[in-house]
Amino acid sequence: MKQRIRALVRRYLHHRSPRLAQQVARWSEGLTLRPAPRDAAEELNALCRLTWHWRLLAAQCPAAAAA
Image (cartoon, rainbow, N blue to C red; front, top):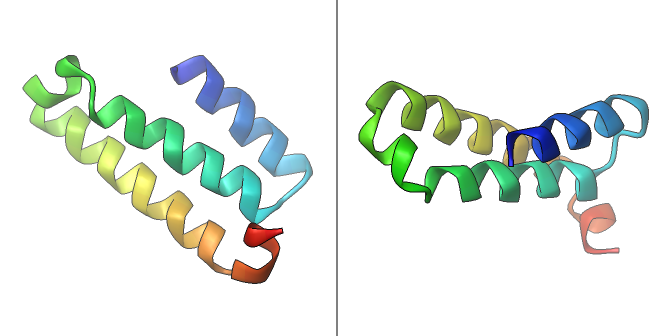
């Protein structure tokens, strides 16, 4: 999952779009649902902040995200 997030972030750097930002947010949110981060408070906190950050990026242009 982390590799997928890395790949999406790289794509986002070259082609900034709300859709890519949403995908990063979904994948990072998926990581928060796994058992390992739930047991490590610091990692869970970092993943929640990552998800929040990417959701904000995706929301900057909601019309494009829906397309």
